[in-house]
Length: 210
Length: 196
Image 1 (cartoon, rainbow over the protein chains, first blue to last red):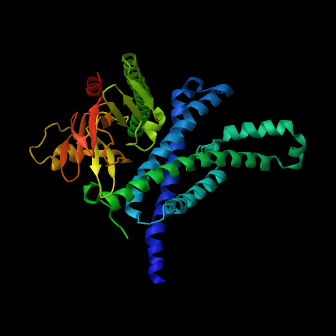
Image 2: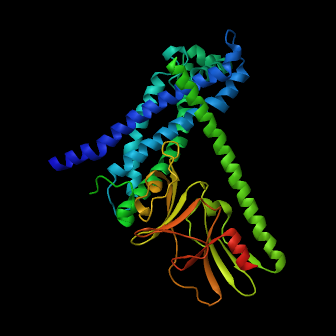
Image 3: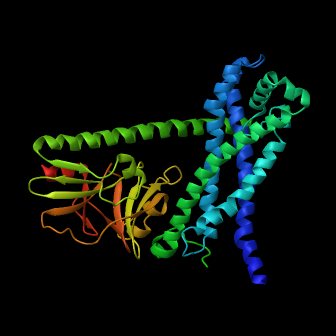
């Protein structure tokens, strides 16, 4: 039992923690970076005036979301490249990598989701630490509020806004997870080939193999 | 001040990466169109070409499977295409214990620009130590010989990379006409010459 617990600590808890920290860092980095980039490139023109709504929308669609998505994917790719060969272990079952991938990725993503939802629109008044920023959320909220005054009077609008946000965010996360799982599968296969078939030919040698 | 400079550097790096990937993907698409037109020009001379896979499958699915067969009056060529988007690199065909592998290795030229090839010990040469892996994929090569005499198995390398090597224990350079696992290695020009 003691051995098992130490194995869990070394071979599963470590990558989970590394992934969680990495995901959070890359998330903040990408959100900060893309928002600042948008401000410099396009918002510069409307520095002391209100930015038109269409410009806000198109900067988000063309600049902020793709760049933040790309930056976070690149950082996760480099993280997984270091992570998988060190924590790889041989298995006969080909589906095992999926469970391991979910065990490593999902806790980190859950933390990211909770942090995003709690920090939505509150930090610096612009939601700059969430990928779906507060302006968009506010627009949705006002659109809903103007259509359903009844719900507003009942005090349920914030709940609906929150629900819409979570739905959008879950859709984003699903796409993100799909791509990250593809990455995980490729790297897992590569480490499997290196460990079982290629052996001494590989320049990046596997550190642990049990 | 330093942070703003770093920030601008990062922005330009990311914008450059976006533009470069766009350029590369368009270049690769054009290469495939050229490939297709080159082969379809052969049909005027009475050569039969049958395609087994679509271009997207050739690029993204397992390599080493037969992508097309070319029937001339004399010979039939079963062709498996070896392709990658990265051509300023070394393509390496490796032999493992059970399978063959295809590896693309890019030189890290920003930090170490070494062009000198170091003598006989090519395995440990500076060229290969300053490389990093771009991709690794398993090849589906069959070792059995073709049933008829006038049939040939061909590994077509397209677009041509900077270097093409084969390793089981040491590095060997591959040229047009050399063989791997019963497959003859060909570049497109040499193949067109062979057919015509």
